[in-house]
Amino acid sequence: MYTALQEEADVASKSKFTKNAPSQESYAEIAKEKGNQAFKDKQWQKAIGFYTEAIKLSSSNATYYNNRAAAYLELGSFLQAEADCTKAINLDKKNVKAYLRRGTAREMLGYYKEAIEDFSYALVLEPNNKRAALSADRLRKLFQ
Image 1: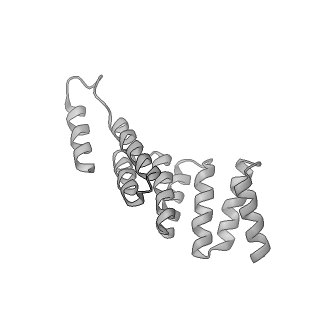
Image 2: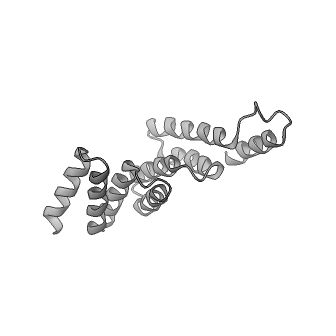
């Protein structure tokens, strides 16, 4: 999967017609869109493969890590989801979805204090976010 897109990107980058040729970023976007469709179809593993492809083609896009984290959450792969959310946050400090997903992963891993911090920070970024407010309140009542 990745190899085919990578080869196309390499050929395109060496072509004399690179102005009109798709860039690695555009191939990464195609992989992301395929991942989004697989996600909608509840094909979590397939979605992870496409998002991984997108990351290999363009590793500085927080959305790709964030989307892969969502698929990992669906599979119950909470450590991988937490790691991807952390990468997304490192690339985009204001990514509310990444804080929410990392909070969910951390809650499932039993890292309640860290989960509360993530949900609370999501609220700082987006004060009216109901999911963040409910999750933070629920965990505070249980663990503080």
